[in-house]
Image 1: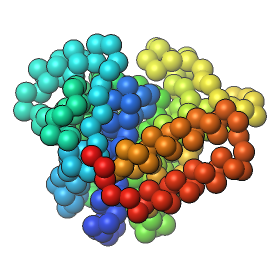
Image 2: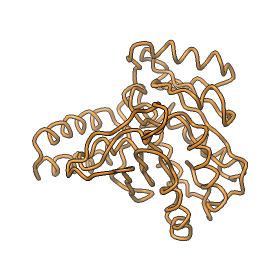
Image 3: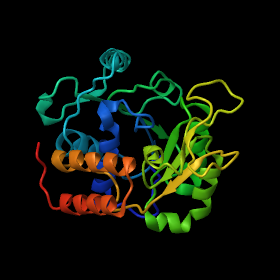
Length: 285
């Protein structure tokens, strides 16, 4: 959910959020639970076009191509393209990698083929809600859409600049409360929840028709009656995962796996060093 701000996003903020979204849209070739699939925007936000262009540029030019390998993924991709022949096909690295094209579908209907199906491959769609361009009007409408029309209940993310969040904190809190999702992220991405053993990952569907599943995993401290897990970071957090350098990303992935297997302060230090060093490395694709 891209909350229209009380002030324009800066060029740096726009670029950062575009990279963050592109990274998670391509994660594991799109075969990742809770990856970015549907962007919920405000039709009347003055920066909507700029935002969509920034995300598409980040997908095409600023993040490497990732092959979709999951069985049946290209058949699903083709079916989405069949329903939306006007969609943009975005190639990273000039299409050098097989099955790495991303299908970007702008301005789909609220209740349609794209919003009623999980792609689990490299498909991104956008729903533009016709509300006033402010948090007070947009957030309740976005929550209602997500709860009543959007397929699945695993994860939802809210992006709102820090200045607007200070003013509209109550609206953000209410949105988090009202969202019927298992993991909710504020200024970050919901899949971070399944990277944290203390949090939970699972569909918020108790007593309902199974779509994303019943129950959850994680919850290292064994809390009872958990409804959802919530993550919040800064709008421009240096901890955001941005896939702008293959070497850094693969090294960080290996270090993360080692840390989860055998947690240590040394493991945390190694990951921090890789993150810091990565800020100064040029793209290698």
